Amino acid sequence: MMKVWPVQFHMRLPEIPVPLRPDAPDVTLDLQKAFEAVYDTFRYDLSVDYTRPPLVALEGKLAIWAKELVRERRDKEVAFRHGEN
Image (cartoon, rainbow, N blue to C red; front, side, top):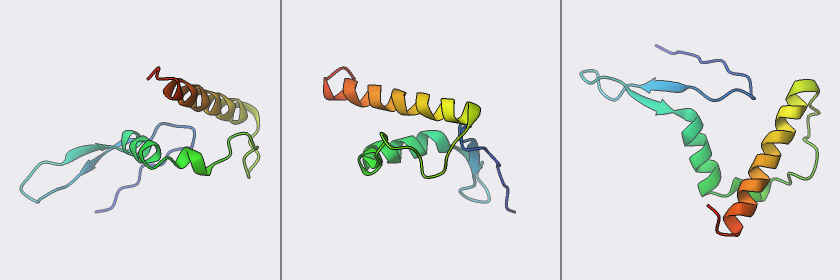
């Protein structure tokens, strides 16, 4: 059986059940934490120029949300580089 977890891109990704075996209970996978771990580990931030506007223009609350998110990522990177992690 397939399940779908619809989310808007500004929402946190959900935790989802992952079946391992028919006779075992599902385990929970936190998709947001998994996404962030891959993004940070493989340094995807280096392949995106966050000083440029997005290819798809955002408006209103989504634009404000995106600017805040970029600012937080930039601040996190500066702190990391200065050993403040």
